[in-house]
Length: 547
Image 1 (cartoon, rainbow, N blue to C red):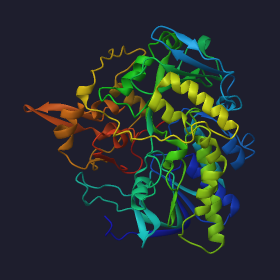
Image 2 (tube, rainbow, N blue to C red):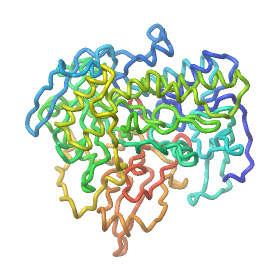
Image 3 (cartoon, one colour):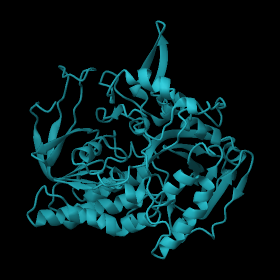
Image 4 (cartoon, one colour):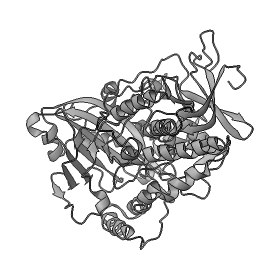
């Protein structure tokens, strides 16, 4: 659609994505210069609709951005009071004491939050400063001026199912900026394009990912312990894959119950969603949830590569922020604070460049601040935990990773910087090398089938639009992935988007894009790298209330 004539609007900075990174950038820009013209474009139906995170928030980013956030009513209502780690077996658990853990693992001083609600509050602060925020505006294309990114196309609606222009098509508009910030979250479609076009990943380790699934439960008040944070490892994943769980007690007798599976697992028969459902039948978790009810569900990929996997973050006219780069501290299970700090750093670099009369160059000061400042220091201390887990398994990585984090607090590492090796798609092995895994059928009380749970994500896509999940080669699912890998898309998707059905005696690969919760797992884990996730039209997708 590049040849369509569109209206254009000019700004100083165009920000794609109203998550913690994008909103922090917008706020900081206006704090530095109230006259800057700043716009934030958000694909969700409202700010926060597509935000899903654990989340225990380290408030250091918010402290730096809005020091008086308490007085301004930020929704950080539940300070962490108790911090528990357990190793699970099938029938029991062992508490891992807190005292041997490095200080960075301590959650006291942090808050259990809904990041969706934090972002809604941040959007209010941004708008009070004069930032323009447009929800329901998916950004479908980059706009170039020579080699420079000068803007994005947003607000395309009403395309025909085959992607062509119809009589009801709204072509959208171009939004141009002296600089464009991409804060799309994990595996953003425009960020992926920028990384490929400018070869930004060259010289860096491949990015690694996990799939995080989360439910909100209302539980018996007698079992609720507000401010309690629990993390577990072990059962049911065992040696099948890396990962673990979180259970966070927030206010109003609610708990966040979540499960993360690292996507570098080898066995294509593994079913991450069913591992999550099985986990809730552990006696410790089942006892907590019994008599309660699940009120929401969602899923999202998580960037896990850390320090050595961060690509170059800048190219002419454009900067990648937050999870578009990958700034999650894996052992802490925290990235929102770094996302906020990255937004501030990008804003400061852009404001200085604009003040100096520059436009559209590379914001090298931003990259330097991320790598050498607070973000880089946070991630460098834990850089070996993920590769250790991948190479040596859970128990050795617990011991060696703990040792490495302790020595890193003293400024050195016994291991240097370990490599990740293969990306997560390449890690998938042929199905005939592995046994099938039989999973218990969901009972409808503690565990649920995927489609029932997806209904609790309030996901909706206008069905006449083009599918936003593109196959590079339509023959691959049945011709390659099914015979070689037992077509794992049927299992790795936490929303039941992909299935193989029999029609007129023939197998068909079906894409139910209406179910998609925008987790991006398919774009990451497909062993043939045959699926390309792009934005559907604006406002479509999940509508998370309190994730």
